[in-house]
Length: 231
Length: 197
Image 1: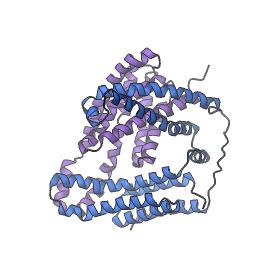
Image 2: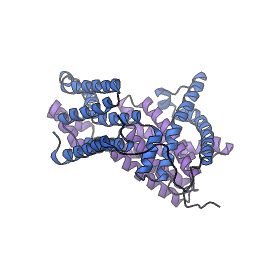
Image 3: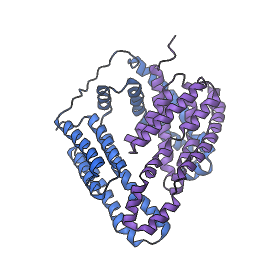
Image 4: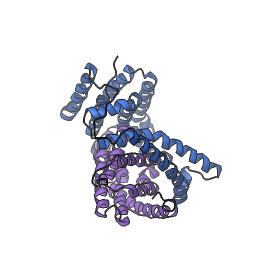
């Protein structure tokens, strides 16, 4: 099966986002869960799908059963936050995870160019995605080095010694990443990222039947939720 | 000479790099501090202090209009597509980026006080993750009433009042001022000496 285009997936995220903001009923939640699970399954991500279903089942169980047996006030308000409020964000996170785990960067850039997102957004975005792992790696190294000198970066240090933590963590991080960043920008310029001409891409962007189906379906769901209030 | 009013490729790459650093530090500290509800509510203030040096170092590279706006848009994209926040947050981030860009531009991209003021405005963006709970308040309390009963819902309403958002703006603003001062000191002590600020 040919996989979905990145544009379709972005549209899916926006659709789920909109539906959640309108506020949804519990039947609708099950329906969206089923749709998203189907998307995960078509990509063969069975384990991830199961984990999400289990988390959702736990939250529903907590909301409908567990909360009725707890009488301590502060605990109830805290659990309410987890079971009810977090459940609203749950679908957005699930869709975002679907997008990230099934999209390659070059596909994404090709799709964004196809739908005429301006270069001023695409270039920084590509750099950002490319640079993310590098910064994370540097961060881990600096953390390890600071642990060796007995300077922690946990919760306690951040809250009680914010200035010290900032200085010991951020200064080395900025020094090393700025240097790497300059090398990266030199390399990118050498490959003609600043060129005025249109760049070519190996990846061919094209919509197929599945794309149109998913797009129309998500659009229909948004309208259905907005006008008829869902199931 | 390069035209100063247009974004060069180097500007765009710089924007991407600093946004990446900003985002990694932000995620790292969010994970560290968000397990307790009280620190979760205080998170915008923590981020305003901790991310200040990155933003202020970024400002020293900014010479053209648009870079801070793009940073705001990118953070909005990250928050919407990676962590699954609502589209309200994306709009809010882009808007704050634009406003602080205009403020910094008014200072000619060289005035320190205008840049700091731009930062105070920019650091409001994490508050928008609470907007969703705020806007959907009635829907949220409908579900609470349905599962917990009216008495409980009234109690919860009393401890999460409407004025919590304005209060957040105030303490984030104060934290951003502190962050700006610390960032200025760090810049002078480390980066200016090394010649990268």
